[in-house]
Length: 307
Ligand code: GLU
Image (cartoon, rainbow, N blue to C red; front, side, top):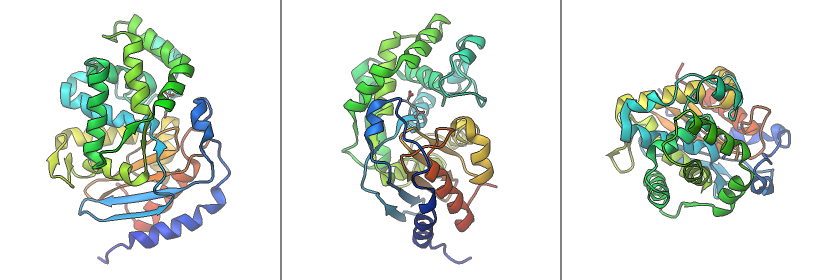
């Protein structure tokens, strides 16, 4: 088979997404995020064999938001194995990522680890004191990306704290059902900080490479998690990684992925590569409008999908 020219594919995509720019809306429920200039696009590919390709505003750091839920889930699975599933379910939520009604109906057991309530329970599961846990998370993400200067954007974390009324309600509701071991504010501090990590697209695609490589960080050759756990995280991303639009994403893109309201999306082609895209304007489901289109074009042109 001919070698795929990923750089040519990225160049083609960056032309073809142009008509879609300006059609979405930047998330403004976290006020600091609303300040990000809209008309930006970047994409990066990292292959398991060590090749890298970038295009667009690839130096710009953005807030990874919900994408961080994959990192903390990985830490929780390392720590607890399958025991984490006693506290969080494995089903798509079929509702918004911050629904309180569903959490009430289901007795404080969140539908999956990627809706906010699920991620808050996961943060509780890895909680070991504020400073220690935040340190563990940022070190983990630095190791995965190979970028030691990654940081928590304190301005974003503070904006989330200040306007995080629903998250506070969710954490307290979960606590009332006995599914939070630590105090809600302690756990939320971890949660807001993990969401507030800033990265560029290349950091992001590098940091997800272990999920394309059976759990091994192929740049350092270190095992992050087992092959079995890798399969499970990828399955969860496929069924719950794109808010309430996972069906659409599976249909049009055909890869496991995770998005965040900062406009980032990262996806994995098992055994081949990870691909990250960023463009801050969101569609109605809360996913990057241009990002989804770019990934659809990517799997079409590269003929790379899991199906
Ligand atoms: N920090 C955001 C929140 O809790 C995460 C949202 C997201 O990216 O889905 O609302």
